[in-house]
Image (cartoon, rainbow over all chains, first blue to last red; front, side, top):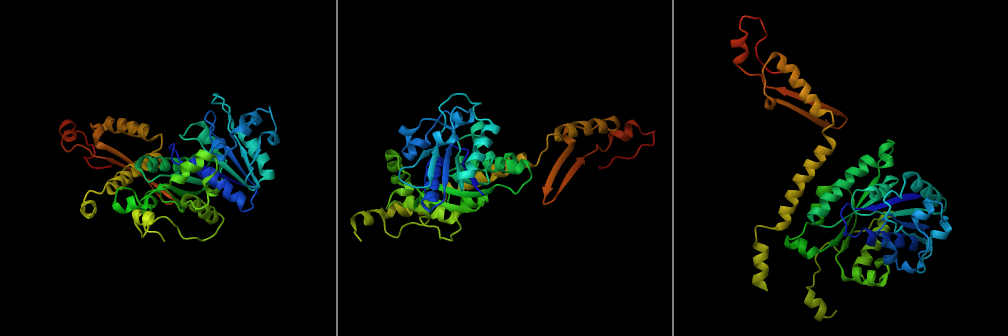
Length: 270
Length: 102
């Protein structure tokens, strides 16, 4: 039985695609047959973050329209076994994603995959609604910043009212908070909402805290999901997040200030 | 550096505190309007006011309709403040019920 997970946020630029790429890669690394779908029709980017932009031939909308079959459109990841990517279409037709079409593709994917990760576009328009409609679980990506937290709350409201599970009166979509771009030293100083602050406002369980890290940009430059970067704190945080999602009970790292100061770490050795 | 640090630490106006307070207020408000207020509420309020006005002159601001949701049940609270003097002086001869609260 496949599980459909939407990675959503409301606000743009908070780390949905970064999270989708690393989350799907992490699931596949741990042996689960995983597919990650880009729902951002017209603004395809997951392919770039995953480093497979030059291998895109057919896309999500081609399959919905019957112009290609799934095997033609799915891109097999070259680094990690069990991982496939379904790119978004670059069409400007906003009506391209139909509910019936999305459902048909998801049902076909369910036959071959254990996890289906849906990378939602920003906003609360059609693409975002389609990405979350069929979800069983949701990773709500939030930055410790007022507009992101507010938008996340709005998305939680939409998950609770406009998902298929909500409409059909089934068990609600299981929600997980992913707090990204967190800077513990700024939270300590009182300049940034703390993990506890965000948890108190949103009231959903915390799946992972991803520290603000230069390796996120570096790995996106290279087209490598940050979870594959050895020695990256953000990558390690995504690794923990995936393990937690799969049921491991791990303490949260990277949420307290490092004992050593930055200069000491730089020059102090050890 | 030490001075700088103590300056920031001592600062009573931590911006994160402000952020949290503002968020708590706006999020509570938006959750309220999202879950608490069904579409029919304004129309219900208008019609109720019209009915009451047939008998007693009341002002729009004197009627309050409030819907509360708690686990498992909903409470529709209706509060109309009737004017004290007017009905009696105008319709004193008729035996109408006195003013009060509904």
